[in-house]
Each structure stands twice: as structure tokens, then as C-alpha cells.
Length: 196
Image 1 (cartoon, helix red, strand yellow):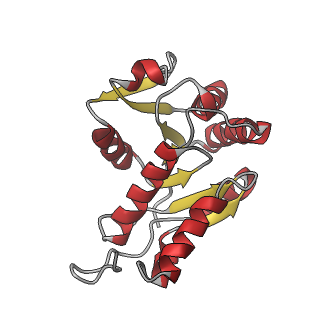
Image 2: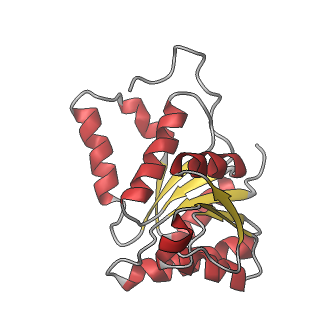
């Protein structure tokens, strides 16, 4: 399997109340730089995004920000990061997808959930086979995972959707998973993807 070289991290433009979130984001940025992994993220210098990018840059890592023009002020585009400015949230997600070999869902808010569910849905529909890792920091992944279980239990998705992603507890486990993970199975032939 080809080695993962570029990883998109979906995370919050806020830091959250628990200092463990910011600490873990900085730990992830530093670890990615040390491992030679390019960080693709939302382009901001605030919140978890800023902590992640600052730590990757401090470790001499390659960092690419992807940010819609209207958010360059709200999320305060990071001045030290190579930025790709898009015209919409939709094109931001598409560009992050194109630049990345794998995806990490980290702590964050509605935007992080949106990015995570879109990339999960694209994989469910057979549009890609790139690995998706959900990193649980201080219980942050719990609500997301419970929602997925709820849609399975209520019959709106098949149990097989659990195979679309892998959950890991904390940054060391995440980095180990990235080191051992290649692309997933081939997408299902047209008409055979998992049901929505």
C-alpha cells in the first residue's frame, strides 16, 4: 500500500473549554512534522487550528491551509501558512480532499462535524477509498460516534458503515494508525455502495 504523505485534519476554530484539546492539537502538529507528514487543514490561526498549525510549523513541517475567502477574517488566516483561498465552503472541502491521502476528525464544532460527515458519505458512496480516522480526545468523539450508532439502530444506515472509519484514542494511537494504514478497499462497483 502506498505510504500516507498528506493528511487533512478537521478541527475547531475554537479551543474548547478543556485545555486537553489545545494540548492534543499541538501534540498532533508536532508529531506530524516529525513524521514528515504534510498537514492540510482549514487555514486559521485561532483555536485548535492555530495550535495544530503552529506546532507543525515549529517542527519544520509542511503545512497547507485551505480557507474560503469570507473566512479569512473570521477564522483569521494564518500568516505563516501557505494558503489556498477558495470561493466557498464546498470548494474548500473538495480542495482538502484532493490534497490529502487520509483524513483525521479531531475535536471541533459544527464545521468539524460537517467536514467529517461529508468525507464519510463520499467514502460510503464509493467516491474514494482514503482512510478516515476519528481521534477521540477527552471524550470529544463520543457524540459523533453515538449519532452514527443511532442512525444504524433506527435503520437509516447499515452496520457496514462502521467500516468506513477507525476510531483511535489520543494522538499517539492516531500516529500509529497513520503509520500502518494505507488506502482502504477498492470502492464498490456502481450501484453496490452501502445504503444511505
